[in-house]
Every structure is written in C-alpha cells, then in structure tokens.
Length: 238
Image: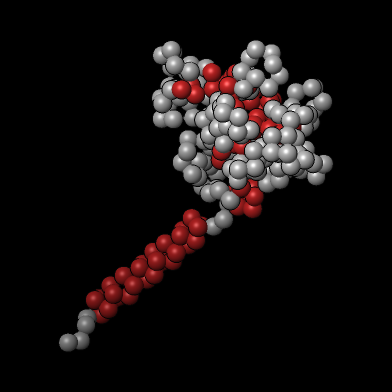
C-alpha cells in the first residue's frame, strides 16, 4: 500500500528527531566518561585525579576506595608513618618511604627542624584524631594489636640486637628474625613480653603508653580504652 504524503512526512520528521536524540545521548555519555582534569579532586579526599591514578592507585571518583572508613588522602600508601595529604604538605613523596634516599624514613625525619619527627606531627593532625568520626588515618594503625602503632614499632630497641644480625632493633624490621615483620609481631624481640608492655627506656611507662595516645583514649566514655574496645565510639566497629 502506497503511503500518503502526510504519513511520509511524519516518518521523516520522526527519524530526524530520533537521530538528534541519539546524537545527544552519545555526546552526553562521552562527557560523563571523560577523564577529569589532572589537578582536580572530584571526590574531595585531598588527592588530585593524577595522584590517585599515578601514585596511590586509588579510585579518583571515590573518597574511600577500600571502604575502610579512612579517606584515600588519609591513607599511608608508602607506610612511612606520614599519611598521604600530610606528605603533600611536607613536600615528601607519596609513594616513597625515604624521599631523599638518606636511609631515614620520611616519618622519622624532622622536615621543619622543630625537634618533632614528621610522624609525630602527623599524629597531632586533625586527621589522626581517632575520636573524630571517620577521620582516623592509616598511619596510626596497629596491625598486631600490641598497643604500639605500626609507625612506632621501630622507635624502640636502640642499642639492642635481638637476633644478632648486626642490625639494631630500632632499625630492624624483624627484630627476632622469625620471618614476621615487627608491625605484625606482638612480641618482636621474642622475650615473652608484648611490645606494648615493654619499657624500652626504663622510665616506668610502658612503650604502648609512650606512642600515639589515641589508643589509650576512651572515645565513648565507657571505661574501656580504644585499643581494648570493640566499638570505641568513632562510628566504626574495630
């Protein structure tokens, strides 16, 4: 059956409108998938698109890529005791634990020469306040639950060499040479006493009470210190 002139016009008009709509959809899709500007911080985690893609290997569209309640900017990608955004402030490298290659980790340096190590200044930053909801930074983690932060495990043992390997304990990542790094070893010198209960400087205060005080706070005021509390009131289950 031959279509009338009016019907033919309607079909052409419909096809034209459909083509324009399809072009708009394709165009908008392209814009949505376009890479953000290198120096933009779309997820507001303190890191630029370029830093997340090239250095930290985190998702530039998610503020907390691994969903551990620590923003990507507050993680410590090179495990030097200084979180990512604080490294940017100090001018040290995010992906290098010893930015100036002098044999001293960035966290143990004193960038501003104020007699306070970089990692200790990191502990005093707002991002390290364990009682503040969802801001605790990765540099304050205690992997082996021995009451000594990972970053502080090598702050103790100067002049001691538990495994007689020629490397003093404060410079040795595995004090007792048992194949487990100190930050994963509750008794790193293998003397039967947990690291947090040791008193390295013999001043009457256990080492676990001399490092980051946040572990010894009581965020929810329930009479149980954070390091012993399964729910310390910081909005996350420990």
